Amino acid sequence: MAKVTSKLQVTVPKALAAQLGIRPGDDVDWTISGNSLHVTPSKDRRQLLDLETRLRLFREATERQRRRQRDVRVTSADGDREWTREEMYNRGRTR
Image 1: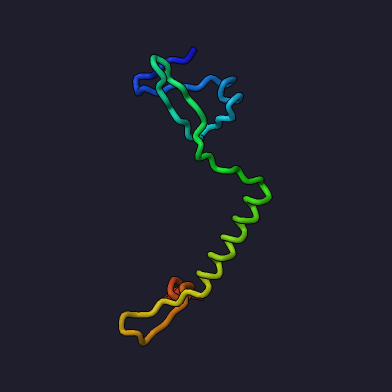
Image 2: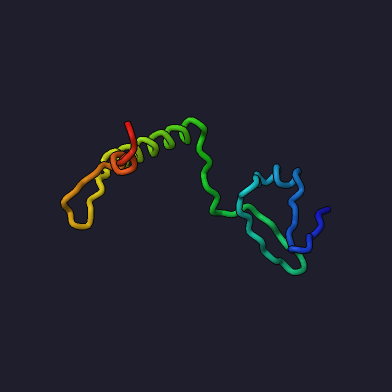
């Protein structure tokens, strides 16, 4: 038996959540049928990626970001000076 909180929140019992494959952060659909309320996992569930795929995608995104940062050049308003991002942040510092 679950209780409704003062914020109208309901906790799904662990056994039922496990049976339906509902995990923290998942979306659920609520439907009314007569005097009954039905909770079902959302049909728009994202496909979970395995750890190796997630790590590969993270490494690829990190490398793309590094390339973008390395290639960025900042131009002054009058267009006569150009600095790399690193040069701009290190200007005026002792080396």
